[in-house]
Image 1 (cartoon, rainbow, N blue to C red):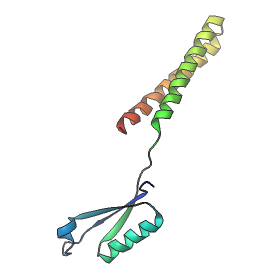
Image 2 (image 1 turned 90 degrees about the vertical axis):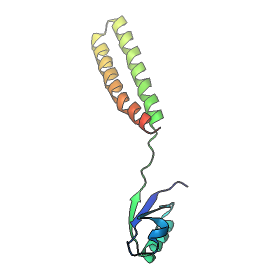
Image 3 (image 1 turned 135 degrees about the vertical axis):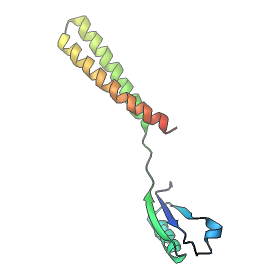
Image 4 (image 1 turned 30 degrees about the horizontal axis):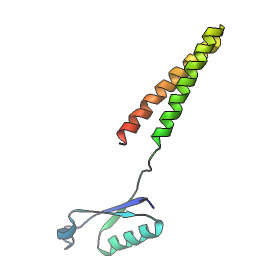
Length: 115
């Protein structure tokens, strides 16, 4: 099971734990029961805990593939509309293609940042 929370706390300067742990202690928790246990442990050690939620990963790859498929579908639709003489449908497909391509740029940027 992945980590769902991180518990951090500053060790007091007069604490003997500071020589072992340093200034900041960080502990993972995989469930709410484990989170409560870790918070209790830190409080017993004289450390004031701060609970942080771990951000969940976003599946950028399927989103990028879906947007790419949408751009290609809009391109094919625009070409067919141009060849058959439906200029209104061609403009609509071209607009959809531009919007999907614009949405694809930040998706690919996030995909690269997560690597």
